[in-house]
Length: 256
Ligand code: NAI
Image (cartoon, rainbow, N blue to C red; front, side, top):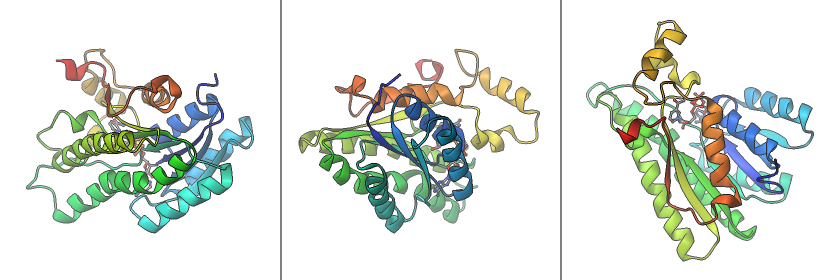
């Protein structure tokens, strides 16, 4: 308990899946969290569920992470609501399969806007406020698909690899300017959230997850909490000498 006590966090894509698990974990460890999502009703409802247990610790805001003006306002609103910003988790993302030939240019651009441009915008507008608060930690959710390519993940591989490298550039920039802001990326393998629905297809979910699990040395797909614990470490002062790192939460798959 208390590993991020007194800190203010902003988590995108927090209406479900990893963003929700990360928000809950940060609150459980003492943070106040602004949760945002394009699913405005969903994220507000999840924030209220958290507040029902720990009053005043979460706020749900509508945000399309591809909207530059909205990013500026969300960062400002976070500062007004909880008086600061110390942790940014760029988590919102989409995924779909397809080779280069199968992917339309419009879909390529859409995926890069949601999965990559959002990370650029979030960091761009959060860093000044984090610096004004004495520093902080940025955690960008990439994917193991940003490190290991797949035959039919052209757009997703591209965007997630770029998130990893962008995170290193941000880490070095912040280290150089002495702003006491660290930036790291997290690279999960398959985690059981709705984003897997396309991969699961029409198959029975448990059978499809078992099929995915056979590729993973630890023999299972991940739980959202497996990622949340990793994010907590990178968000907390326990990782105060860790920046520009790629933390793989992948059941060992990239060790093969
Ligand atoms: P999910 O589909 O369950 O949740 C994604 C959330 O992002 C949803 O609440 C959705 O409404 C929100 N979102 C989508 N577009 C948005 C936009 N334009 N603006 C704001 N919010 C938006 O997916 P999951 O699994 O929780 O994924 C979270 C992150 O983790 C993504 O970046 C994903 O690429 C990454 N990831 C997920 C893995 C998995 O197997 N679940 C594995 C590796 C990475």
